[in-house]
Image 1 (cartoon, rainbow, N blue to C red):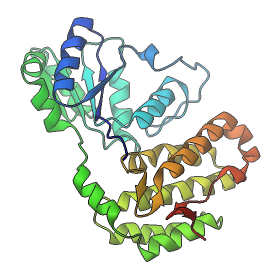
Image 2 (image 1 turned 135 degrees about the vertical axis):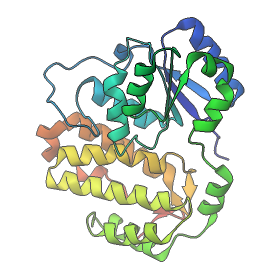
Image 3 (image 1 turned 90 degrees about the vertical axis):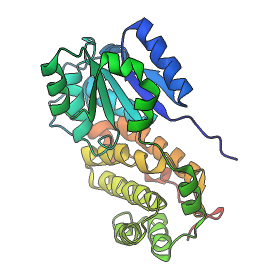
Image 4 (image 1 turned 120 degrees about the vertical axis):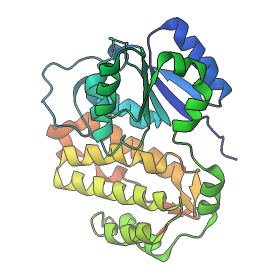
Amino acid sequence: MQKEHKPIIVGFVADLMFTTRIQKAAEAAGFKMIWVEKAADIGEVTPDAPRETPGELLHGREGQLFQKITAWQPTLLLFDLTNKAIPWVGWLPALKSSAATRRIPVIAFGPHEDVVLFQTAKSLGADAVYARSRFVSDMPAIFRKHAHLLDHDALAEACAAPLSDLARMGIALFNQGSYYTCHDALEEAWTQDQTLGRDLYRGILQFGIAIYQIERGNYRGAAKMLLRLRQWLAPLPDVCRGVHVARLRENIEAVTAVVQTLGAEGLAGFDFSMVQPIYVDGVPLP
């Protein structure tokens, strides 16, 4: 049986005494906390990194922020607006403009008298902003209200359903190396399915697009798609509709690591043999 993990809240909070209180409240409500107290916790600054428009930032500390957030797949982001060690004025709009992270709810808290601070956070993408006193008095309820929680029963029911014929066709094309043409069948399968199981199809579809972008030598397109697809496959059980999701996730992470190591200049050296076939019912779908 697959181990069930606690949903994650990432807290951008530096007050040690306060983080202890938040931690206890989060654990009591069934969440796990990951702390980012200062920007340096994310990684080193890269001064010579190229400037980028909002979206998935691939370079510098902001790029490392996206790597960590998409790897953690948190259910909620929590910002202390008085934490000057976190550049939330830049990070909030970046996270909310990215297809890889914009679905993650963001809440913030600060001193009740600072109306401008509250308005700024809301304008930059915070889904809710609380006065610190209100946040302290009602933390568990606030977490439950805003967290993007998965319906495990609905997901299990969706994954117990059979793989659609269109999805089977798309996976077969993927396994044959037709990374571009597999898109149409998988997209149609995704469109026709209104259950949580549709995320399986979207994840495979986007992996195919990522590999196609590698074939074209488009590093930015491949790297961004590899970030985006994590949100669809991360919540799924190890096997969904017969698809060996755990094996697929491992292959995606391996491909992602190689693409990041090669970079734009070295992408032509990517070894396509490392892209593994997708297994269905224990065997590679022909």
